[in-house]
Structure formats: structure tokens, C-alpha cells
Length: 136
Image (cartoon, rainbow, N blue to C red; front, side):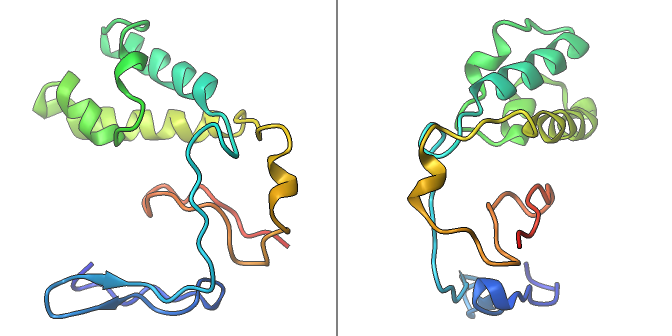
């Protein structure tokens, strides 16, 4: 984060703040954590993405999805692909996961648990992915 301008979004409560130790703070009006299976169920999409990726990498398409849940894609790729191919392989699985994200269903009844998000807020994801879209 150091060296970049502060990220700011009025919908998220303000700019990221960094102290002398490099710790980040983000003022926010609210925070919602979702563990897969509470609000959405991505199991089918994750399996599809990683199976497709594994096949293209010459890996076991049935075995790879079994080791990816709860891990960053870059960490999984680092365990499975030689260093010279890791950047491209990570970009590829990230692309597949974004493509398959459109198929992730909401868990029945989850949408009734909270009011609609105001414009400018939505699900969080690693900044490089930009998977959410403002609502409203």
C-alpha cells in the first residue's frame, strides 16, 4: 500500500489510513463478513474453474479442487506449478474464477437478511479482481 495514493470511497466510510508501522485502518459505517455457504455457495463454480485450470496445466482435474478452498489462488498455484509459469497460471485461474462467479447462487433466504446495499458498496474481494459492481 505504501507509495500508492489512499483509496477513498464515501460509501465505505473514508480513506485508508496507514500508521508508522504500516498498519492500515479503514473507517467504515458497516462491515459484513460472509463465509461461503452463509450468503452464497461457490462450491460448484470453484470446482468448475479449478478443474478447467488443472486440465490445462496437466494436473489432476479431480484432485486440484480438493486443495483450493480457503486459500488464495496464488498460494495454491505456487504449490502446484513451477516458478517460471506461476504468474501466467495465477492470472489464468483468476480469470476463470471471475468468469464462473456469475454462476454463484445466493443461499436461499440470504437476501432477506439485510437491506439492499446503497450505491457504491458491494462484496469485497482482493483489489486486483474488481469483482463487485456498485448497486443502486
